[in-house]
Image 1 (tube, rainbow, N blue to C red):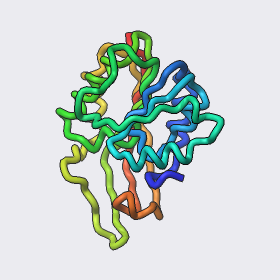
Image 2: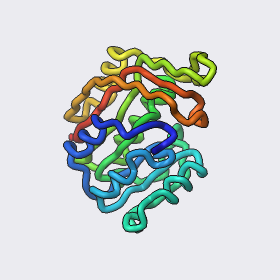
Image 3: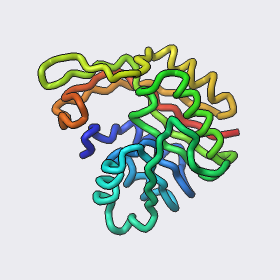
Length: 199
C-alpha cells in the first residue's frame, strides 16, 4: 500500500471507464499509487514527480513484467512540463492538485491541455473540505494549500476545461492509520473525480 493510502475504488472504476490507452502521463505519481493499474492498460506510462526518492520507490515496487513500459522523470509540475505539445494519449493525476493555490492549479491545467493530444483523455482528482489529523490529534494544513470547498472547485474545473467533454463526480473519503511519513495519520473529506476527452 502507498503511504498516501489505498487506491480508491471510484478512481479505479473511472480509469476502467475512461478507456485509457496508448502513452499515459502520470503527474505527481509519488510512490506509485495507481501506477501499476495504468501500466496494465496502456502502451507506456511516464511517471513524473518532484521527489526522486518517491519515483525510486515506484520503480522498485513496479512488477517486473511491467517495467519495460515505465519511464520515470523528476519534474516540478508547477513549471512548464518538459514535453512537446500533444505528447500523450492520456493524463492521470490524483492526490496533488488541491495542494496548490488556484493560480498554480490553472497553470498546471494549461500544461495538461498543451501536452495532451486531441481526443486525449484525462482522469484527475481534487480533494475538497479536507481534514488531516496527526498522531497527536492536531489538525494539519500544508503551507500554501488552497483549502478548497466542493462547489468552487467544480466551477474551477468547468471554467478551465471548457475544451473537454467533462464529467465531474463527487465522492467522500476517510483513511486512518496512515504512515506518519505522509505528515498525518488520518485524513477525511470530499474528492472530485474529473474525467473527460479533449475536443
